[in-house]
Length: 421
Image (cartoon, rainbow, N blue to C red; front, top):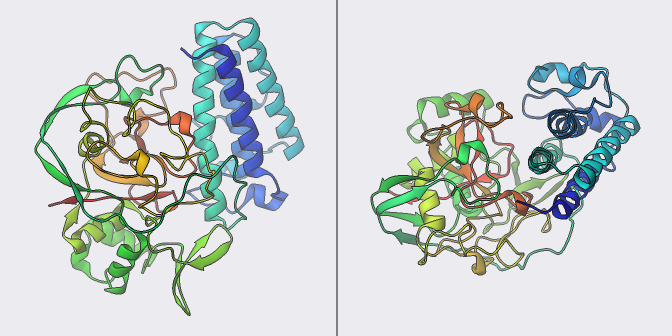
């Protein structure tokens, strides 16, 4: 279990990051347009504080809420998404005051009454806020706002592609989290045996240059590249290329927050939906890995047992993974060789989330945790992504961590790597 000093430091750190991610935005930007893929940022920062108060202060410690109207304003399980723009939200200064009050209560409880429940839900609330902080970053990207500040030291660079496949042996493999993990989410529980045939998986994610070949070959226009559901998505969105691309005088350009820049050929392709990844695979004669194959390639090919990360049990560092927003964006796929997995795959943690072919569902014996809305409502409708991205918090991740989005989402920091057929 984490020490109370560590947990207190994390509570302060994630709240500082939340504040930084909304700093400099005006009242209009904090509300933003009504879109199905984002929340009003003013609502969302209040929500993360409400969630922390709901589970740490009220549930674990039994103390009363700071605001009588908190549930009516910020309970995401009870408030339909479209109504969040209609709520009588407090002003930004009032919301920040509420966040400070909740933070102070949690820090007091960790110092004076650090029960197992207080500690557990304090840690849970940090991870919940970390996930929303990533959402704040992609909301700024979606709405074309200026980039958020880049905290800390940027990871080491490195340039170029990293082509070729890694050979992964088949056999029996443990998929899921080990029971000695200090904290896991319910959808990772627990490690169970699966059997995989041998397979070949790309050493790096698909690059922007590789995806541009598909676009230039009129890949979005050729029906044979698309599944039925994918073609319906492409038609509905009138998609002709990734959402933040445009053709400039010198070739393809990509919008990074509020700025257009030449497309970086050797960085992973970003902001593509599962349907776009599937179509590229059909065009290229490849396929998406299952999440079991992805985890096997990340964790299962290193001697001496199964590590927490592709490189071993040591925590992520800037030399191993592009995380924590420090780089301000992705690096080339050849960067960070110190983070390679045992079979030679690069950047399986950080840089860009990676779509898998797998539907999001429960592992055998699944039991929902106290926050029942985290996983269970999304089983069967979402696809699994793995690995994290450049703005994911390092403390959140391990090789078994499962992310999940619906296959139509192309706003998140997602790309993909592929397997040979």
